[in-house]
Length: 186
View 1 (tube, helix red, strand yellow):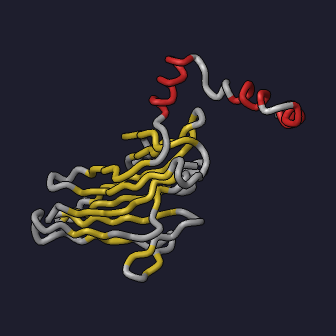
View 2: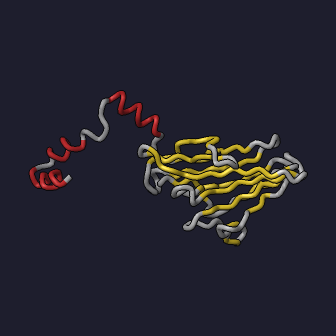
View 3: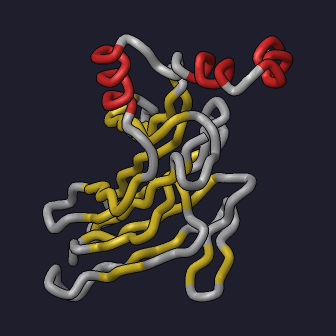
């Protein structure tokens, strides 16, 4: 399971409050010494102007694995006039790769990006993001850092070389007969 950490949440819109809640049974974000449960909303207030954004840098916040839609990161915007809009983000696996999926109020998919290979493997498939509420009211996801290879890059290598991890067996066999039982066990 790839992990998409939220390193920063930024509100640039002086007319909209941004709220985030993480429905994750295993990971609970912390901000200013407060641990947020699955029921708590982290509120990022409206800035006085877009020139002076409100920036929150929570600890231990990540987009959760959906587990069939049970866990999600909820993002809510509330205008000064009281209009509320919601989207959700979740991670799910597909064809040996993990994807972050964004959904609207009706749970229709409105965005999707590949974020790493399956498995929670630090150094291989963790990424760090910022969620930014822009002046025009749109939400922007900004990637700070990503570990590991992108799916399309791996597919290109396989298509160009015609192989992927094929050379491992000849290398092991060259090491001698003592490795043959190991190879046979694969």
